[in-house]
Image (cartoon, rainbow, N blue to C red; front, side, top):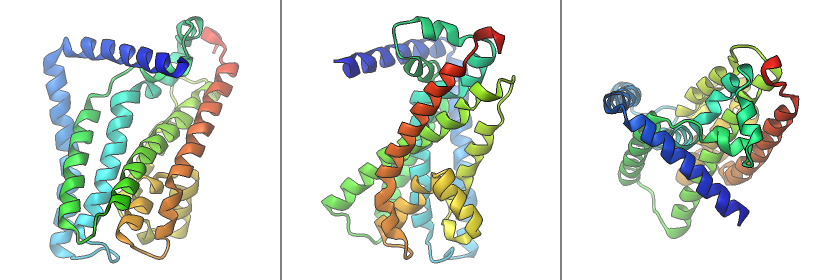
Length: 265
């Protein structure tokens, strides 16, 4: 019952955010167009590379597009439904977290639903389109178990994206400055996972597989689906990694709440 009530309240918050944004329809459509252009440029760049090079370390164009689509979906859902995480630094620095703490609702739920990411809609749509197209273009047998694994990988990837964002932004409770550059730095690490991580040095592979586990959003699930590389079996750990980092992120957020000092920061 408590979970059901939390979900209801969460979506009520989001609906209010959507209504506020749609009051300015021009901004809405401009943001959608900008998001579409930005993400399309990345795929055009990949296509241009494969016009010259048929494979990258044994990976074909559509296998890499498949990886891209998983990232698009994870980023899209994270931005669309949980964009409020990026506002934690402002809430902490300006003492605005007080109003969340005074309400009889989970502070984390209120923070996550405090913003609505327009670009997330574009990412989700593009991700689904390119996912279906890459499935159609690759020579792989798609049975029930593989489709089920794909769904689990997508959900787990969303969880990892949310968890890493929450951990990075929760650092604001300790930095207590007007800006927290860690979330942007961590966010940019996802760019390494748009390609097979085997093309990078071992140090980078360790960082994006263990400390910032974005490889479990794209590379390891894709390796498992297509049977690529000798470590493809690691893809089965994706749900476990997602659950662990979600648990860790929630603990870190509430540990930060205890350190919060209102406007005295």
